[in-house]
Amino acid sequence: MSARTATASTVPADEPPVRRKGTGPLRKAGNYLVMIVITLVFVAPILYMVIGSFKPSDEVLNGLAGFLPKDLSLDNYAGVFDRFNSPATGYFYNFYLTSLIVSVVVVVGGLVVNSMAAYALARLRWRGRNGVLLAVILLVIVPFEAITVPLFYLLNDYRNTYYVQFTPFIAQAFSVYLFYTFFVGLPKQLEEAARIDGAGPWRTFFYIVVPMSKPVFASVTILTFLSSWGAFLWPVMMVDQPQFRPLPLEISVFLGQPPTDWGQIFAFGVMLVLPLLVVFLIFQRWFIQSVASSGLKG
Amino acid sequence: MSTVTVPPPSGPVLDEPPATKRRDTRAALIMVLPAVILLLAFVVVPFIAAGWLSLHNVRLNSGRPATWFGLEHYTRLLTDPEFYRALLNNFIFAIIVVPVQTGLALGLAMLLNRPLRGMSAFRTFFFMPVVFPMALVAVIWKLIYSRDNLGMLNAFLDWVSFGHLGPYDWLGNPATAMLAIIILSIWQGVGFQMIILLAGLQGIPASLYEAASIDKANRWQQFRNVTLPGMRNTLIFVVLVTTIFSFRLFDQVWILTQGGPDNATTTVMFQAVTAAFTENNVGRGAAITVIFFVIVLLITLIQRRLLREEREVS
Image (cartoon, rainbow over all chains, first blue to last red; front, top):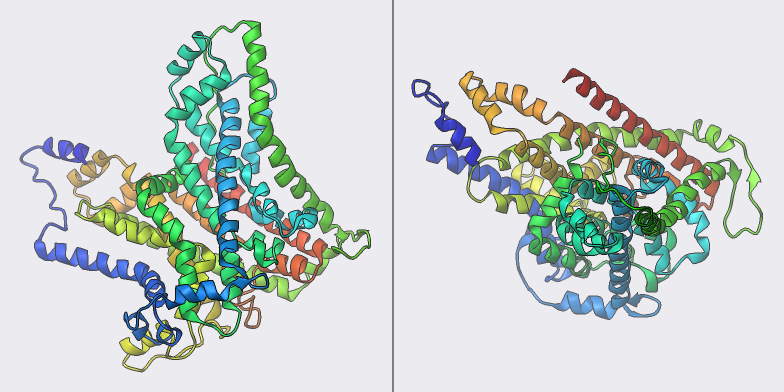
């Protein structure tokens, strides 16, 4: 922004700056009105879920009155815990635990595995490096959907486990690529100094490079967490026992189980999305930067 | 995803003694090994297996070995009206979602790129649906789309039209089911594109706009001659990702319509899962994913071509 004002002041005096729209107070109010209407479109369904989670079912599916905060209580939350209370239905903590285990292993394992590989590709010299680099770049274009069916066939013996839900997602060509581009762009002086002082590649990586690379670690963490917490297609194919169902799969099962209790379904939904929302609201800046960086590849 | 411009690796520019080189090589191999093994096992092997499976008749837990089936799965698919319907549906989804979502995302990004107070709060709200898993989004919208006047959307239309519109059975009517899925998909996904485009907008030097103002360019001319050219690569990237996303469509369909009514919302991935998982016809499912990959590859190659053209021009 400061660059813009600086250039504006260099405009010759006889050439009055073009009057930008959006300066008058009326115009300004109009701008904000537009923004607020758009905000409503994005927020209304979320608000609907949150309000509905505190209301009895027949008050949720009730036309526009579904938005009214009426008869609010925590009954639906208690109801969810009551409903999932046997091995046949699964316990609510089962679903949470599955999502948690899968996400933590995929995120943490992915950070270690992919960043190390990227460092070796970006900074160390070894035979075969260019071949591996090319292979990783080619693998970026293979979407997970393209290999679901053969994976389903190959891992059939491991259905209904935690590890079948996380092992295929730890190594990600796209994460390696994100780390790689970041490491290549780092200044080399610190690493060279460390090497001259006798530090080996491991020390250099963990003590010099990793601390300098917080943005890319944050980006990969957030992008990976979003996709692993929301994983759906793979659990649909690999999990049918309630004990190993992650939250998104369970809410789809819950939706189809009569009697349908919309209040409880929304309470389930709120609990499902809560970790994501909390992380999002705390690390908002990182979230938005990570998404932006995922696209800066032109 | 293949707009990838890969900068060359860069090692420390030191004259290393042989012992150091050996140590580096050993460390590099250990560092790269876990990723290489996992990628081989969980991407490369299944990728090859997809080709092999698609040429066989394979059933899980049947006790019978896989038998050679030649190209039969492919010829059956390419003469199956239901599969064409799935391709068509993905195509319709892409034809609508790609321009609408990209256009909306660009519009939102330009709204947010103005120097007004409170823009970061609005950005937060616009982006919020992106953190919602698609399965949950589908559940919320199932309620919004409820068929009678108790459904939120029908109630809203009834209210704004003084009772003249609706109620509609959004998900139960073949004419509107895909549209309903398209709307919720855009609602969830547009914030993602918006952020990428916003980053692109902020990458355009302000001096270009100043120059345009001095040349007395109006807002439309500025948009045509400064914004769009400056955003070309970002836009191509966003269009590519959205097009590929359109062919990956699955979660919403599985939860909301199971491909119905009358195959109005069946998709390529829905059919792949149905074939392999529901009908235990793994060979057919694999053949569908091979076709899916070919489509993704074609989209990627077209996009590469577009990017190369631009480099030649500039």
